[in-house]
Amino acid sequence: MQSPQPLNRTQLPLFDAFLASPAPALMAEAAQSPWLDEPEAFSELSLRGAAGHCLSLLAPILRELSETSDARWLTLIAPPASLTANWLRDAGLNRERILLLQPGERQSPLQLAEEALRLGRSHTVISWLHPLGHAARQRLEQAARQGQAQSLNISLG
Image 1: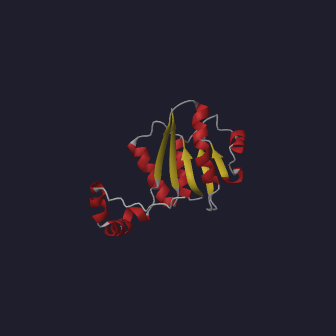
Image 2: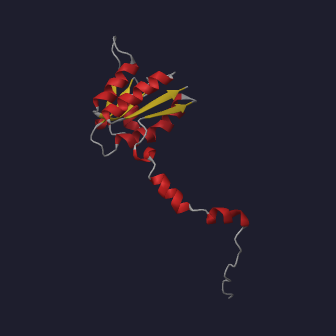
Image 3: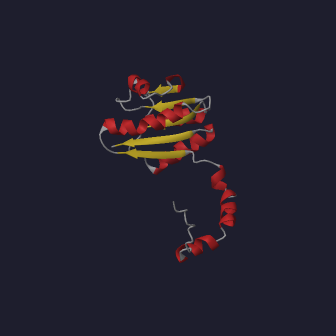
């Protein structure tokens, strides 16, 4: 039986520049960056395709958000009709931590999402607003910061 030979390979010149760069200094600079300290208050997810496929992609995200250690609600504002209580159960979500809200006659889904965010009783407020303009994004982000929550808008197409 032959003993294994040590691999005596030379370093490719392509990687020399990366290895010689001051990576620790760059990482220390990035760690001091103010945008790393404060998470984004507003995020948007756009899903296109068959409703069943979109819900399948959405299920793990919602499941993770429903199981977070934050004691506040995961609030869903005006979800699509296909997102039923049965679907929530079948997808394995913690339904005891989810609040489903529908806007009333005098309140738009955007206004309801803003209010839910501003109150701070939800760690995440998910809305299904499409299209969502720049001004509406700013309103949701401001309300999320005020309530120390996260706003996630999902656009289904």
